Image (cartoon, rainbow, N blue to C red):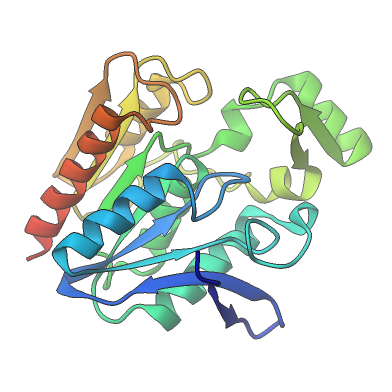
Length: 247
């Protein structure tokens, strides 16, 4: 695998990126999930799809994750949104379509709110807006307040899943309590067996969006990762639909 390129931000942070040049009505911008990176199965499937069709695609790792240097513990929702905005502003031209997985779906919505003139559509894959609100019980919140960090069992094995108080606090500017002023076409793909982001979150997101063109595709038996072959095909169909609308 070739080494990634790096985008240097004004504060000195360096963001690992992979840019696939291409043409078409919009560039695709992939936003990974929490503690994930740009080399996951969904990101690679999107890259292969884009390569086959000559479509532009930008992938990146949030600061402190994947190939981007820094400490994961220093990451906050606001910092990673800044990363996404910098990548969108510096590495894409004209219209783009953010594609967000899990937490990346939350960031995709925030990105659309901040760059409405450039976003032509949005895809949320098991999108998790406001997960700092509904994803933590009162005992978890108290631990975060008392110790500044919370470690929970990783459902996929390996190292414990870390949340810092800084990240949790940065996520308290919530979206789902009111209308979300995104007017572009939105596609949401969600599994009905998602053990991390309940299907109810996808339904709330659908209802909160102001766009008149919102479609929620529920995958029977689909878990949070949505990385099986038929699940990937569902995601790519949604991408193709958004690209056609952008044209």
